[in-house]
Image (cartoon, rainbow, N blue to C red; front, side, top):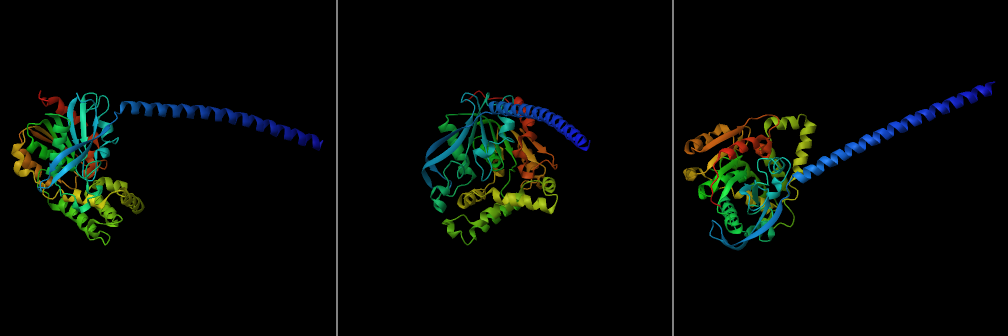
Length: 383
């Protein structure tokens, strides 16, 4: 009797387990089916985005006998650049920031918000040109071999090279717009002053039409001194990158970019703040000290204010209220707007979602304003 009961219980347990296994198989099968659908949908969306996102084409052009502001002449100055769209589209020039390049703008927060179908600078309508400034990207730079023997350049030299690329290299006689961010924004002011009839619209961002000074220059000076006082600097003839470059670049970035509210959100505890700093200390790991020094030094004599009256084009000036390098309370923009009757300022309000000086690198904050301005700014027929 006992044996019969034990066999009955074992059989019952086996049947119960078989039913559970069958149920688990059904659930697993259903889970795998749903997961497959999700993966296929994600891949489909990614494929669609890839198809909608225009692909930039890389180029290099050589400016013969390029004369720097110092009087030095470079027999062949290489200028790297990227283009999007067909050459027959409305030409637009876009300028990047310090220690960046044309490639740094090809990211989801900038290019991904601007150049796709239906977006404000749709590459199906516009011919977009993004050069590497002298000293960056694929353009000629100290790290090519000359090191500190490379000619000292400034923002005027960068603009001269950009103008020669556009006018000689690409054969354009007029631009629909010049738009620049940070260093590129500062260069946009110079474009308007030096070539006042060459564009319909100027859009300087994260910049100020005033002499390099105050905290903006103080912090740059600290980067320069930190590198040049590094024991491994060796007057620019180092055999390995000075470690001070990485530290100074991270220090400058945190001190003059990011936004107070956003940095508090990202570093809301000591551990989170440490993690943020550690990540920043790795950001500049591939940079070259000579290239960076030249970039920071090139801003020293920037001062567009005396020539603002030369500007003829309409201007959409875009700045952020929490920009650490160009704080609105200094009043530089108010003085400039009194001189520029065809200019207006769009000041992005500060929040824990903006990023201080880096806010304008997020095109979502200003793309609608740019669309409005392009729709109301007359297009010249000259090309």
